[in-house]
Length: 323
Image (cartoon, rainbow, N blue to C red; front, side, top):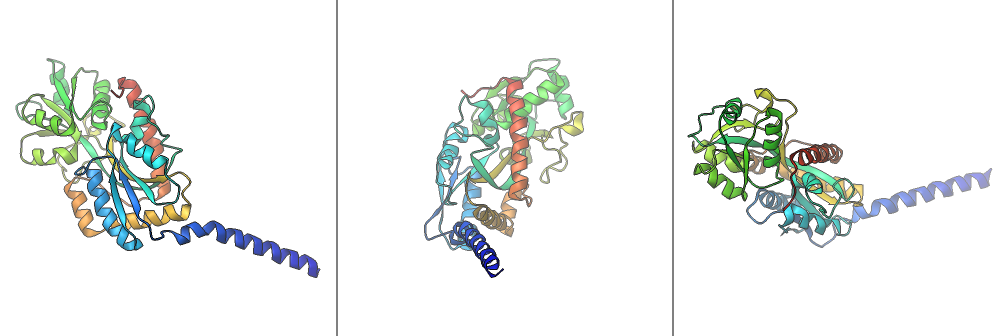
């Protein structure tokens, strides 16, 4: 009997030691070495702004330096590949946009699998695309724009093939059974072309169009989110104008490489979420039209799975391919 009890105690001790060993990486992290946020865009973009706002606050909470490493190019694939190949130790984190979910379908080889190569940490925020027109265009609603497109040729600008504004408008075209000529630009150039009246319509992120909408240089017809935007409460959604199933967002999220211990993912999530909830950060996100709500890594992972599936269908239906 004594021998049996001794064996039982020995086994319990072994299990405890294994549990402690498994928890050690999370407990020791972060050590005195920098954490790096790898950002998919150049300085000045929303992802870059988010990274710098969060890096300062999260770094202070962690007692650690958090660096921002801008790796633009290939629609975000370069940054994603950089983080995918990094050690799964919590020191290299990706900050990307909705392109993360689009690119594996848009590119022949994006260089990563969005569902297997990363651990979702937190969805930082999202913003709808907005369909708008030059003030000279008589359409006052999305329905009126559709009817106008049935009477004469119309062109719309977007920030490029395979971007969510492009795919959102292609989804609208398909649902309405109309033809609009797509004119792809770089984001700033798309906005300039629409304001100058070089294209009559524009599909672009609300964050980029908001100043021109407020100045009256463009007229908003619809937002592509399921709910109206808090910064444009008078602009109806696409769904409110006779369509269904539209919740097309440009979103921004943090990802760790696959294999990072769950304890590290949880700590990263908590500190980034706290940073996003700081008053000055929330105010800045509101100015940009971003909606930021609490979410868990599991909820973010489920959201990403839905996004990958939705945009894969949109890319296939539109025939979009990365150039």
